[in-house]
Length: 359
Image 1 (cartoon, rainbow, N blue to C red):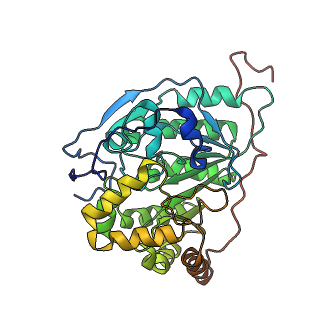
Image 2 (tube, helix red, strand yellow):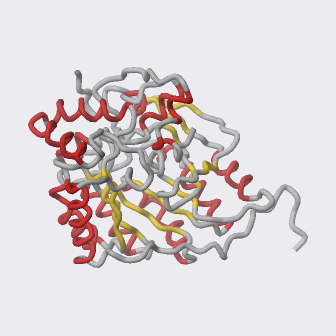
Image 3 (spheres, one colour):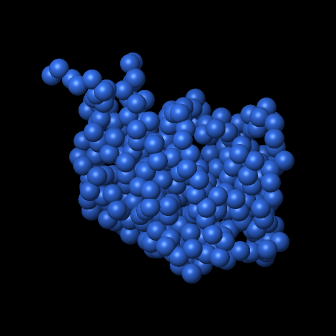
């Protein structure tokens, strides 16, 4: 296997799953859409990124998954240059006959018409507002957002229509939009989740090569909190045998930065992600590779991945239960065990169509 500087995946094998029925068998995809780099990623690593413009006909993705706190989402991009080796969205690149490995990190798709499409969908007769989740598939603030600003254009639609939105990111770039986020927050229309997987800079650099460093993510929490934007710590994924010893320190750091709540998801390795992650372990932490996979299988019904609703996010078995207990105890100790922040739908006003309003 080879290691490419600035990238996490160790191979670029194409997926062998060409049949859609086979993909649909995996419950993990029922909710899916068909050097230190602290900034936006101006310095490209040797393996360059390519961007293809995508022109979808719709932008809202619906799901009926019982263990997700949202029923609709928007993804401005396909693929993610952050390159997180554990990313459960990697297999979506197989739908386009691209590799979930290096292709997912380097062959990206942008949707510049996303805001116009969203405005059109929000204006449909009978539309009922409910929080739209951003960052459920790929990060809305990955480096190419600096160039395209699609995420900001989507947030501008949310502001104009008074529509609630949630954001999940691991990029300090979210602070660019603090002005807009603060205005949304003043009307209870936004919550931001900042993902912090480890406080170990070296580990983060290898595991999430083009995401903001842990220090910068905590700084993003601090700046958002200072602007009165509700911000939560998202300790995900929690990786047994690799990052689980940091649970208490990460929760404490998030609380000190100003997070108002916290949540966590146990590592998920659907489809090709399992092989990619195991190869990454052998290349980067060979002394811990066996233990990590053993503990994960103990928490996943003996498998690398358990797609069962209710279990896929939290895991099962004594080790997974112990991790949950530690996380909840740490949250209670630092005041992050609060109820989920409720967003308002009372401000929603459908966008006007091409015909001007009479009033």
